[in-house]
Image (cartoon, rainbow, N blue to C red; front, side):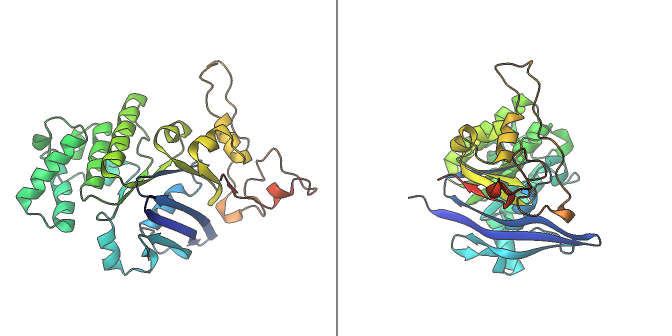
Length: 314
């Protein structure tokens, strides 16, 4: 049996604004085991990134606040840790690959400085030891002439290479778990494939747990064991990735899959989900997807959809 690394139970994160309360994450539950990859998918604005930042306790307060729930990491609720204790968890036990590497890397500091800073802080290495490990990490993620490039700045790397640096930074302290927030966004398909294969190799080598956040269903088929589908701050369906992709049960999941291009008929028109995501300030009652759902009704005949059922594949 694989060791349970993380349990997220009924997690809710709200933003208290002048216009009202934004329920960005509203009671989500999932878990991840050692060596397992869990994907969180959904449209932009559904709460994927906020859920990840909540696990890392990086929500800006004010206006954001985790209002209830548990985040149990290796048996401890990290929502109850002090900030110094949480700083020790970040990077050391749980690392994060952020969505845009150019804004995540400091443009005025060398790549070597940014890698060695984490190594000296968390692993208490000397400067020479940290430089040696930093060079080895860049080699591991496929950056040529790695030790020389430690002296370069982020703008001297391509987008794909910057993402590799972010992955190297994430695994530098041998964490137990990584959160990858859309690591293939804005990369061309060739580089996307390279980054995906790199992450798969790292997961296997380090036997770590991974939360993979994306809106690309094609990506999750390659990297994830389980998937949680989010819509407007809620998980509407979750289960093994093959089951979800082959036999989706929730209308929103079906809509996401139907919106993908048909590789057997590239001339076929796309089938987008009609309508737009409602404002999080005015969430629909019952099922949050009902305003865009082809099965929704007002006569009670589609009761399971009207009342909002989170579907779990067993």
